Length: 348
Image (cartoon, rainbow, N blue to C red; front, side, top):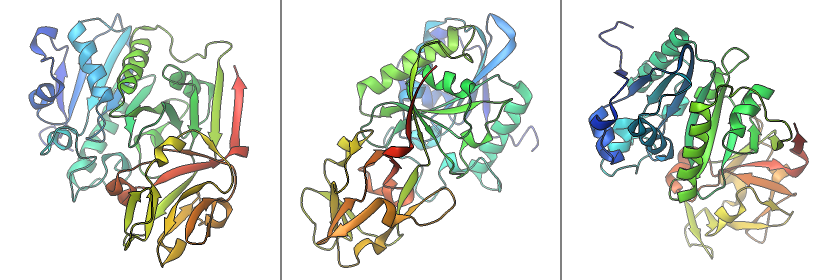
């Protein structure tokens, strides 16, 4: 990739007085994917942040803007990627996860890198190799109402320490979908932080509080003694068939293949017992979705069942990342689930 063709702009040590208070105005000022570089008290070390990979998840960029406007110097050099600026500004501010017809930005961190989003992802990978940060945070909002949690693809005390700056809930995922956190390892720990729903004020506060700890603590890679962490392993994804007609209501909708209970978000990170009703099925029954584990196997009967055209949990489950956005349910998944037997509490 030539310097001229590099798709990420650079902003070095922006002066607080040049930054607008309004986050929409800030994004318009950036104009596109931007790497903000801020010198720290110790420039021999570096940390990284990525946020706004999805255009409808504003908590991370709001927290970053608030910090930049404060003028406070971080403990170490900080690089921050504000990624899907065009998506966030498309038509209505923070409306689209991805621009219709384009890929999900957080599925672009593996080859091929041929489209414009792949170029952004490839360039950021190059920048991580150049700056060699000691850690990377990828800050998101959930697509529905939810408490905060972290997701890791690599289980270690360092990954747990980074997540614990924001939340005590950690999901260890084996899925490989092309997300940024899949680049994680011993030398480059990367964690995803899900701050909660974009409409939840506490999500913004979670982003602010966690970011403050990440920016200003000298050591963010060591776990605090005595922390009680909730770990969830071996999650599965409920994915809809491309032609599935989904609706959300408190009764079955005629013509829908799947009607999901209107209040399904209340199950986010709650334990639901076996035979909890989650919705209603149309004439095609449960053939309109599949439940995939990380190996790509459809394990639907182990997790869900149908009775009298109703859709139930087959065992005690923990659901998370439940969405009531039909577009996200169609393009990504309706929710993730873990068997409660895969939940472990550990005290560090």
